[in-house]
Length: 230
Image 1 (cartoon, rainbow, N blue to C red):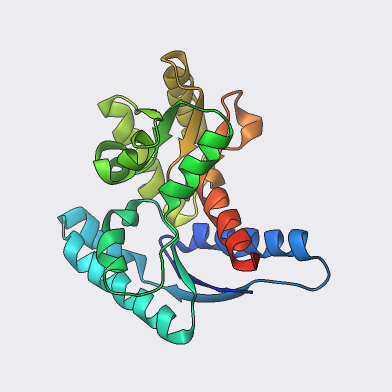
Image 2 (cartoon, rainbow, N blue to C red; image 1 turned 180 degrees about the vertical axis):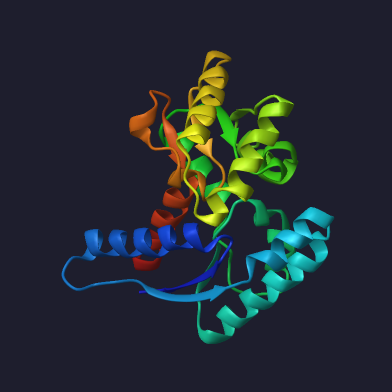
C-alpha cells in the first residue's frame, strides 16, 4: 500500500472528511482491519487565509511547499492538497518535490466525464470561481463551467469563510446556496461541483435534484484507490 501525504487544515473541518473517506474506501476495498497509510501536515489556516486576502500567493505556496517537502521526507508516495483554492499554487509546490500531487480538479474532471456531464455549475471560494487555475482543468477536458452572478459569488464566499470554516452550518445559508444552484441549473448546468471542500458540510444530494459532485469526497476516494493499486 502506498503512503498518502495530506496537506490539511484548510480548514480542519473538511480535512476530517478526507481522513474519514480515505479510510472508509480502503476498508471497503480491502476488508477486515485494513486502513490507509497516511501522513498529515496540518497548517495554520489563519496564516494561509491572510496570504489569500493580501494576494501573496507566493508566500502561501512556499508554506505549503515546505509542508509537502516534510511529507515527502517522511515517506509519502504522493501528495493531496486538501482544499480546492490552494491548488492555485500546485505548480509551485510540485516544483519543490519529486513525488506527484494528485490534483483535485483532475480527479473531479474524471468523475464528471464518467457521469457524462458536459456543463457544470461551479461553487467555491471567489478565487476558485473567478480565476482560471481550476476552471481551466475542466474546460480542457471539454466541460463547460457556469459560475454565479457577482453578488452570489460574494454570498458563497462569505458562507465558506465566515461560517463553514468556523464550523457553522446555517439553514439560511443552505437555502441561499440551493437557490443559486437552481438558477445555474436553469441556465443549463447538468450538475454542480462543490468546489470548496467545506461545501459538502452544508449541502447534501438529498437537498436538491441537481447532481452534486463533492470534491472532497471525490479527491479522497481517488487517493485511496491510488494507494491500494498494485
